[in-house]
Length: 173
Image 1 (cartoon, rainbow, N blue to C red):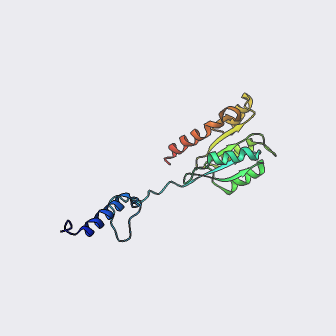
Image 2: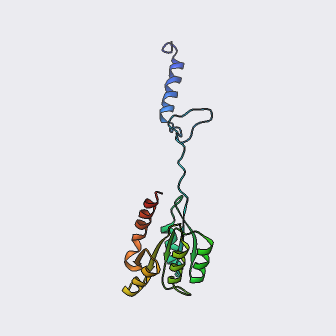
Image 3: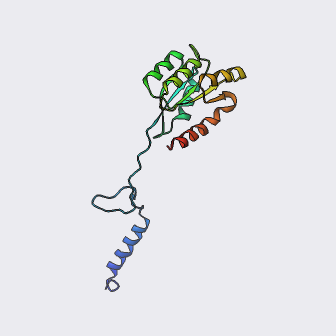
């Protein structure tokens, strides 16, 4: 029947060609009133891990915030350039990850490490020391204060994303 009507046949061919070149419909969410067997509700993520960056160099602190922040997984809730600022952040937030420099504009990272370790209670906290002063005596002191990792800024900066990935894997997040 369509073959006998050349105009209808041309319209059918044009609409088929247009449909073939049209972008695929969005299959991520069901259309109103439609049932989509492929649609799966998004699994709720684990709670965000709160991170604290303790670093007195603004440029390094900014870079650390970029490295540590992972949308829907890790949020830097505070940065601190001094021991007092870091201690206040420890009182304000439940910290799951802390990147701590030892030499600060005021005070040291050792008080911050001890505070984080004592405040952790039942909430696990991973404390990563990141310092330019990676000498054996400071490494021993950092571990004695409660640090989990001791990294040299000049050599180990790039390992931070891997450490965070391992930490998130352990959490199941």
